[in-house]
Image (cartoon, rainbow, N blue to C red; front, side, top):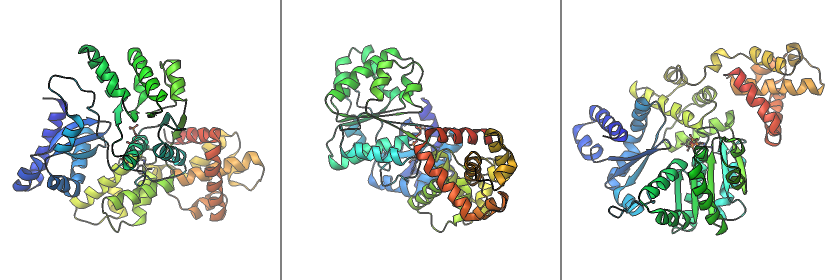
Length: 439
Ligand SMILES: Nc1ncnc2c1ncn2[C@@H]1O[C@H](COP(=O)(O)OP(=O)(O)OP(=O)(O)O)[C@@H](O)[C@H]1O
C-alpha cells in the first residue's frame, strides 16, 4: 500500500465515524485519492453529484482531517474520473509524460488578493497570461513558502485557457520533470518525453530550486527551455529564493531563468492578510464573522498565507464542534499555541529597544520629538513594526511613542510601506528586524 493509499484509508475511516452510513457508502466510499503533490490532494469522483457534495459539505472536514493526520495544510482538488481520463489517457505499457498535476480551477486572478507585497508579481503574471510568449518570458516568481506562487502560476494557465481552451499547457513540479526524465531514460522513450515537453504552448514548473545538484536533469531542462523559448512558448517558473542564490545550479540555467522577468513575493502586510481572510470567508460561505476575529487571526499568523487559511478553517471547525458562532474568544481558544503569540508577548517597548539598538540610537530618541533623519526613519520603522507585529490600536501605539496622535502613526506606517516598494535595502532591513523580534 502506498503512503497515499494509507492516508486515504485513514481519511475514509475518519469520515465513517462522523457521518451517517448511507452518506458514507454513497458519497465517501466511491471517492479515490489520485495524487498528493505540492500540498494539493487530488480526489477523483465518479459524478457531478459527488463533486458537488464533496465541495459543499465535506471539504472543510477533509481539510481538517488532512491537517490532523499530516500536520500540513493540504488543499483538496476534486476532479471527475472522466476528466482525469481525458488528461492522462495512458496507453498500456507505454510511459506517458502527460501525468501532470491537474490545475486547480480555484487558482484564478479573481481569487487572488492583491497587496503591496505581491502587486508586482500579480501584474506580471496577469500580463504574461494575456500575452504568452511575449515580454515576460520566462516569468519567474520567487519567495517563501505559502505566499501564492503556485496560485499565480496556475492563474496564468487558467486565464490562458479562458482565451484559448485548446492551449497545450503543462503544469509540473521540478520533481515531476526529473522523474519523467529518469523514466524516459529507463524505458528508452526520451524522444517521446522530449516531444511532450516541447510541444506545448506553456510550461509551468514549480519549485525549480529542486534542480539544485541534479546535473543531468538541469541539462535536459536547459534544452527543453531553449526549445520552448525559441518558439515563443511561455515558460513560468517558481522558486523559494532568487535563482541567483540557489546553490549548485549551472550558470547557464540561472542566466536563462532570469532572461525574462524575475519577481519576488514577500509576506503580506496586515491589511492584505485581513483582506485575504475576508475573501476566504466569503468563498467558504462564512457569514457574519466579526472584524475582530479577522484582525486577531491576521496578527497571529503573519508569514504564510496557507497557514492563514488553515487558521481560519481551524476556528470554523472549532466553532462547529462547540456549536457556537465564531467570535474572538472562540478564535483565541482555537488558535492557542498556533502561529505567534505576538499580541500577548511582544511589546511595543521591546520593538522600540530592538530598533534603537539596530540603528545605534537611544530608545528615548525613538519616543522623542527630534526631527533629524537618522532618528525619524527608525522611529517610523518602529511604529510600522508595532502595527505589524502586535495587535495594538493606532492610538495605543501613538501613546507609547511619547503621546503622538494616531494620524502621525498612520502617516509613518504609510510612508514605510510605500518606501519598501522601491527600496529593497529597507525591505531587507525590516525583514531582518522582524526575524530578530520573532525568531
Ligand atoms: N494573495 C492571495 N490571495 C488569495 N489567496 C492566496 C494569496 N496568496 C496565497 N494564497 C493562498 O494560499 C495558499 C498557498 O499558496 P500557494 O500554494 O500558491 O503558495 P506557494 O508560494 O506556491 O507555496 P509553496 O512554496 O509552499 O508551494 C493557496 O491556497 C493560495 O490560494
